[in-house]
Amino acid sequence: MSELVLKLEGIEKTYKRGQPGEVKVLRGASLDLQPGEIVALVAPSGAGKSTLLHIAGLLDTPDAGRVEIGGQEMSGRGDRRRTLVRREDIGFVYQFHHLLPEFSALENVMLPQLANGASRGAAKARAMELLGHVGVAARADHRPADMSGGEQQRVAFCRALANAPRLLLADEPTGNLDPGTSDQVFTALMRVARETGLAGLVATHNLDLAGRMDRVLEMNEGVLVKT
Ligand code: ADP
Image (cartoon, rainbow, N blue to C red; front, side, top):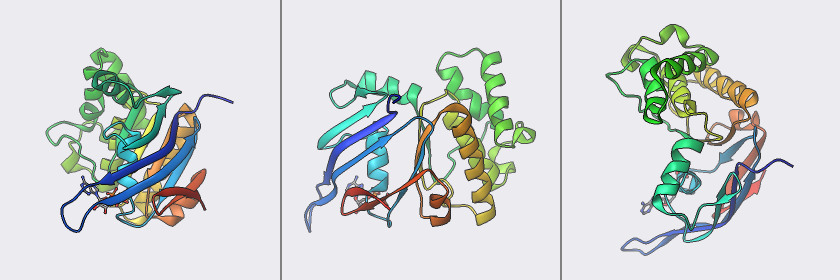
């Protein structure tokens, strides 16, 4: 069996608030994610999906439990190591695209590569390839404001994939799109995952899209259960 891209084991997280007290959000959440596998994370709002994605993406730390990326335990690692893994191995997509408004689609996809030491030529070639994969190459020179919501979100996917991460974490990536556009964005994501061995954990409210992913996990009382 190939190495797991992501392993979460017994993740616990409690937020301490003033009144009326603390909220125990995660109570022993566990999951294994294989290369090339896209898994849906389904739960009502407030159940802890974003919390779990932040912990998986090394943006937050659990109170208890293990986080492994590519077989390496991350909990005991220092900030520098965690930042490096986050930059090289993990891509994020959110409900809103967060593209930089003053840059073109092409530049938005080139920037993370340049920050990671790629040459301009290599960064441009990869950005064009990715934009082509998701059907927005013709919009490469457009700024985000001159693109549709679906195009913006497809560019955001390309940016998340720019440095060829092995893990994609997506938080309601189609939550802001109409059904037809959601479908286009989702189809593009699945195609890229199939072609590159990318693994993805995708929080969604859209049960139709969830059903088309490889597996669906439901978050229930702070643990993950198969549906
Ligand atoms: P979801 O993504 O499923 O909507 P979240 O992970 O955002 O759920 O939130 C889970 C619960 O934890 C909610 O009750 C939310 O109010 C609470 N929560 C999230 N982040 C914080 C925080 N930084 N401080 C206190 N409570 C938080």
